Image (cartoon, rainbow, N blue to C red):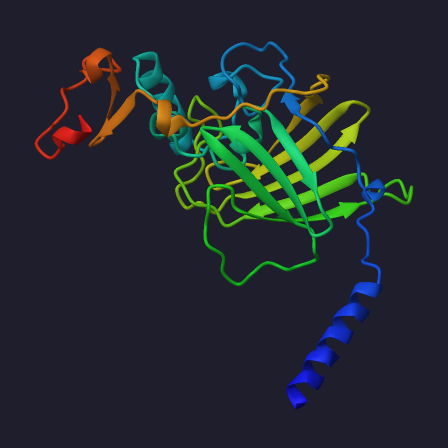
Length: 283
């Protein structure tokens, strides 16, 4: 009955393994980022922007090349005329992508584990970022995504015996992406590099973001700030943009579905939709 002996050996090994205490995760080594984090509103006017300290649109003073400055100005003009401009997140419910994910459109939550820090965001659809802190190097190839591939490392700059700062670099993007709802563009080559320095200063959470992109004449750095919701049981909203949007893209045009699902224009002088290849079931 050799098989019984083998089973007995396996059982003994399992019991021995259970007797070894597992290494506990010492969360005291990390900053307390628990709870719900909300963007601080500096009342600069307009919609949520990339640089919280400046007004949106041209007031952001984005260091764009002439070619991409023209794209921004065309986006703002289209939005003034009722269109969506260069903001596919609004027109098509796409994820905003990094670095716009960290603009603070809704609540943020940070989950710190030894090998990965997760950033959970509600915008259009639930979004999660994985920041790998396990010491890995950049892969030779990675599937491009809206959020990119993030590698981080925890630092103890004050030598207090605990981590205070999370430095992150993110690469491997896909598009279309824009920096904020006015349509500040990133380059179509999607070769962006986003660097972050995340740290807690008193009760304010800072995400110092630097965007390196070929649409820019120089790296663009901003300090995004958030405050913790003081509510004991904060409300966690769920967004489902595809389930509630009244916008519909046909060809290169975006229309509004009004009462009775009647297609209506979203901007002045918009051409009527070409419905030759549009199924009745989708109308």
